[in-house]
Length: 341
Ligand code: DAH
Image 1: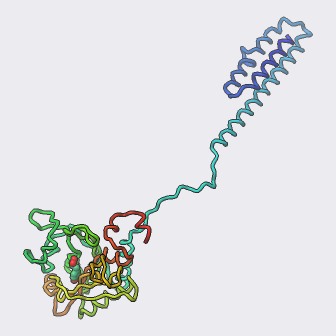
Image 2: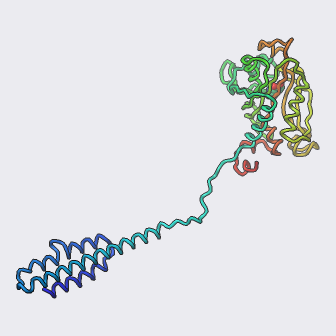
Image 3: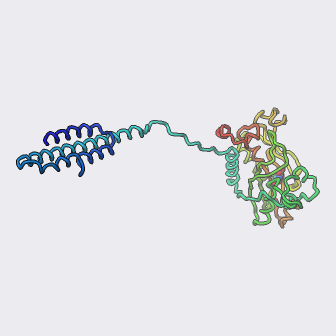
């Protein structure tokens, strides 16, 4: 029996030490030490032994049990350690690898210029007013002294949204003037930025959708000099103090007198090029003294009050500000273009 026990120990130690997964180890424990295991099988034969031999073999059997139990524990520890090391090796994180850059967008040059302009006007005491892009033709034209059949409707007659022609995508921000004069107490000093729609073909300076900033001041004793001073401050602050502008007589149905204001071409500094179509100047805005008919239509007493108004093209303002020579670049939203500003 002693020989049997020694054989079991020898064979068991070998297999335990070569086990390389923990489920194998558990199977070995059952096989050698379990109730139906090899060791128990030997112990069951103890009855055949003599009185003297029994304690000796019993001791030996216990010693074998201890040795094997310890061997299993040690091998199990070794397997756990190896598994941990394998995991650490496979999950290694190199904290020095540069991170994946997060693509953040860029403020659009139009937004930059719009905010600059809003700041300048707010600094002069203007408030910001809003109006609908889907507008009543009445507000877009009629109340602006442009009744049906008026020739000035022609070049703007465009995106009507109702069969009877009473609703239109606004062609200018000027209808906001009417909404403000009808609803706000005097004096008035507002700007109103927003989108407008025309039947223009797309080219380097035109688009069927573009942006304007409408301006309106109504108070006692307002004159053309106030208009000129306000626009000069705007242009000098936006483009620098040396910037040249010129006032040209013009006609708008809702102002009298009317003018257009040009800024010297940023591309050629006035000598004439493709951008300014050889003019040397780029039209920036239309303006004038609010027509008495328009004021009176909104219930304003023209014996006491007068006003000036203007409508600036925001795209043109932006192109001049950043020397952008093609309007289409503004709408393409190419990040390589946008991130230059
Ligand atoms: N609404 C005009 C346009 O779209 C621009 C304009 C001219 C606005 C004169 C005004 C103004 O307020 O007084 O061409």
